[in-house]
Length: 253
Ligand SMILES: O=C1O[C@H](COP(=O)(O)O)[C@@H](O)[C@H](O)[C@H]1O
Image (cartoon, rainbow, N blue to C red; front, side, top):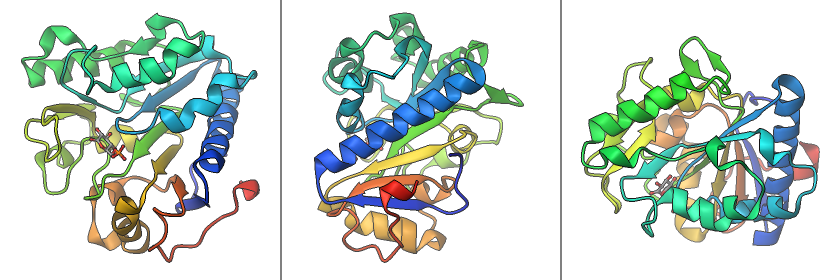
């Protein structure tokens, strides 16, 4: 199970169905990576990603001690702030499983008042981590999990904003005026996202239906999420209601 040649759309009638399928996909991806190179490098985006991963908590086969976790994007707030992606993941997931804390990599809070320095620091952490597979100087995560914004953004790459126009070798960039609060963000560049072995989107709710249709049926519109390599899409039927794109039954994965 690696990068598909075209997006693969799994649509589920219920939240439980989506959660179970996503959990089994992540558990399998993790087992494959550990069998191959002894560890599992995963990056998780903000928004509502950790909740649908809840099925993993009771999954006995997951080797948590082999996980190395980064955040695809982070809101520039203290780590105990209600808007922090790290706090959300910690509360929802990491505090409930035996993953060594040193293998979870939040942003460096010494640089919250300097986005440039914060981005450099996160990029240096990625480069220095010998547990991360890489090709060239770009880390190659075993799995990157993304969400889709109603405006077509993903990670903190917003339509028409400079964060989308980084050079191919840049790992991390920032947004000072994201159209969604909190407005200060650091984010993986599209180069890092597209260098992952696998990318999966999680997308739920009727408010995402237009964006999902535009990304899957109209990639030529060039929304930020359309710049991501072909991915697995775990969505609910509300989100996929407007998309004509072909569905794949999850059991055919
Ligand atoms: O601001 C953000 O929102 C998007 C979408 O998240 P959702 O929970 O509304 O679907 C997310 O992709 C991004 O990482 C996050 O920072």
